[in-house]
Amino acid sequence: MRSPATLPIFSLKKQHESLQGRLSEAFQRVLASGTFILGPELEAWEKEFGEFLGIGHAVGVSSGSDALVLALQALGVGPGDEVVVPSYTFFASAGSVARLGARPVFVDSAPCCYNLNVSAVANAIGPKTRAIMAVHLFGQAADMEALVKVATKANLPIVEDVAQALGARVRDRYAGTLGTLGCFSFFPTKNLGSLGEGGMVVTSDPQLAEKVRKLRVHGAKTKYYHEFVGGNFRLHELQAAFLRVKLPHLSHWLKKRQQNAEMYHRSLTVDSDIRPATDRCECEDALPAREFAGNKILLPFRCHESHTYNQFIVRFPGAGRRDRIRESLQQKGIGTEVYYPRPLHVQECFQSLGWKEGAFPWAETFAKETLALPIFPELEPPEIERAASVLLEATQDP
Image (tube, rainbow, N blue to C red; front, top):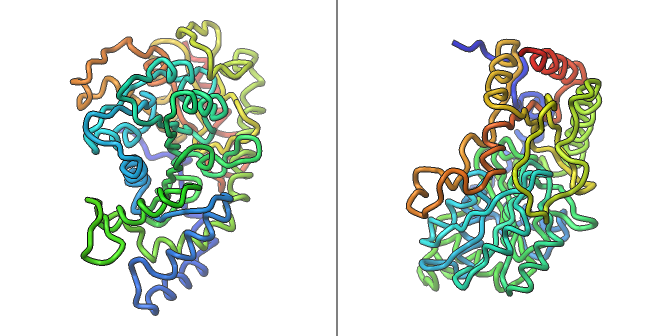
């Protein structure tokens, strides 16, 4: 039986202790108002979040997963349609497509940043393609400049899955504002987490925003008069109030994540066999999976200046090394997580789509070799140094 980690992969304890007074005030404010659904807190939260991103329309919804469903539904995605989605991502990215009766068309990822490969996207577009889903994985935006060119040429909308990358930028614009619609999650582990579930859909298109607002309330703008078949996808007043307390602290928390990542890099690169996964962005290159013999650990590579490090992902080339090292870290009290142990194209629920193992070599490689280390903002430098030291020791084992 594994002993509990003394350094967890994630903790909100210190963050919430520092905000306890403001969070309690928010709770009391909502309680006293007597309004718990679609009230002034949500309206204010949508305005503040939209202003933060610099985008015209923000619609608060029940979760990040539901945000994806609503964005696709607003675009008219349904049975018989196809949506291009990376295989190496959280289930909701493709699950949202399937929930609407459409078919996810999987593509492989790039070895530089783990995001979808733009060349693979271009090759996957067909006559039934209705949209492209760009997932900004682990805190870094996908190659949106190249992807927008592909989408524009094919006359396709882009839905951005920004669940893990709130605050990441591509040049002077935030992830989530570069495509047709951006979808955010406020699950507690995200860069900005609620005290429960929550999500947001943003867009610069007023007609799409209006449709999303209707869809989140059973397809109705006026009660009992339904223009569409929507659902109950509302963000509660209490969660909106909590998120309003937290938003002013987001920039500081992101800076702390970046500082923690820099400390990991400094602490780990004392070993010459530990280096970034590549020395250049390869998002547009159709490259076969390759061997990294002699490299004990491959560190994250930044394709953009802005990386928010929702996760700090390291790779361990070699069969079974990741799992052996993870076990060693657990025994020493260092919490870790595997994102994600099985790519979507080989998940049981998608087997009828026809993909087999070997179809997407990078996605399958990442599933076997990657591991997340603690990176949350409240970590202290000695804790990061300890995690790095334990990791270095673990990589010395045969």
